Image 1 (cartoon, rainbow, N blue to C red):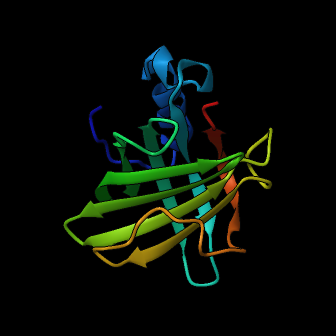
Image 2 (cartoon, helix red, strand yellow; image 1 turned 90 degrees about the vertical axis):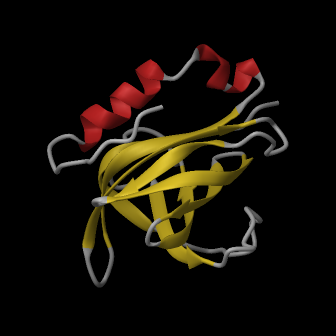
Length: 147
């Protein structure tokens, strides 16, 4: 899947493109876990644009995808999904990141949760860090847990 730079106006369009362009095998019924989203989130120190799409087998195997935070791009190393909660660890030129998201339903803005942490090289996608998150200001997050 190609990487792209998100602009303020393109975050929702990018998210919709991710869902349309993703093969049908990424749905929970296709036997693969999925975490995808795009939007904007405000923390106490900044406002950031984000976009991500990650898939893996139901036990986290063969994780693939990408994460974009503002103008920084990362490659997914692992994905863990449990119900409506997902953890992604990704690597990029500025270091490793750990993304935690929660799909709280529709609409995503104001209810879906997002948090970003620096990650150590040996970090995995365990569910160790909770509670977490900021409600997203705009956009949507989708998490699908394969059976």
